[in-house]
Image (cartoon, rainbow over all chains, first blue to last red; front, side, top):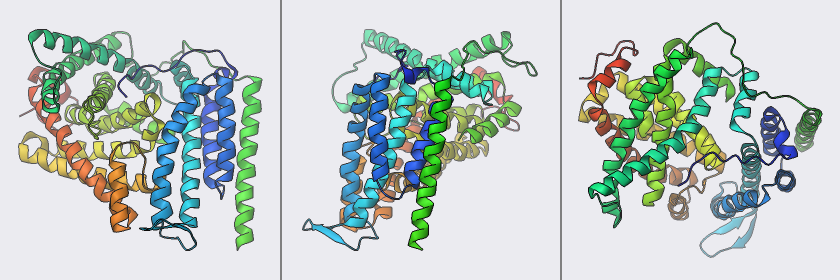
Length: 263
Length: 207
């Protein structure tokens, strides 16, 4: 988290050209579908599909990094927690000496992990392949108030700016002789003269920003705002939407059918 | 989530001015700087509420809540989508802090301590609920999940273990957060405070 910046890099791929709303729909359709489906198998299939989508989007390397970087530790942790101590464990498949591994817990853990990874993966692809301005424009078009859109975009812009300011202030404090290295107490002490000026100057900056926005008519009510960034729906969007809807309906009906069979 | 956002912004639209709105991105920035500070110092904490607390003192409850939500949305977009479900925690903490501030608790040290404890409590419960029901016991975000696993092995109870780890973590985390926020609020010039005091409905200027 040390370097937070705008993560979008334009690559002009098929995935990138999709309407942001389609991608958001994909997050919910695929994610909820995996959540509803009874076993972890569908989730694994969707994850495999997501790797394909990441390859299409040209971000396979980063995608794999985040999926494995998050997936492996969480899998280990959840398999341990749920596998050994899930309250519903009846059938035991292994004995570790201090605890027994139950089949139900393992299944439950796998289910959670697959759902999580589907949500994580779809969100990551959406985020990496969408220009934030386009995302906000699409959201505004589908009913989000433009002020909320401003907030999201402004937050995205302000943070790198503040980090730059922080490094400037750190250099200034170092020039005064404040030690910024050393042991943990020295480092904590070094951050106090850093945090104060950063926050104070940011607050003054906010005041100026507010006045600037006011003079440009940001607070005027009852006008129809126009967007600089335009988003449009293409034929691919429609096809993907139909596919996603069909997928979701199929999963729901399959889940309902298996439930009925059980009863 | 988008539905919630609409009602929040509508409320803010009716209640708050451009002045408060531009404060939100800044507060989100402050929150994230707290986070960077933590990762720079290699602490297993978040410290991602400093800005929210400052805004709760300056602008009010709902602005702070929106600020909490946006912080997590931004974290999800920039760092790791794991943070997204925890936005509910941020919102709830912001609301609690905002209400306590509005009731005048943040002017004295003991009041700030009370706010700290209340916020810790809310954060512990809501974060644990999310960790258990969304992530099945461990989100793998910080080193504290190792502690959780150890506790589970010792007590064989998932809910209690997650809850106690979360409480230890949050007590320290929120303690530092509120300490920093309290110092900052004391240091903000009165001239600056007064322009926001005009926006909040019934609170008098500073102390």
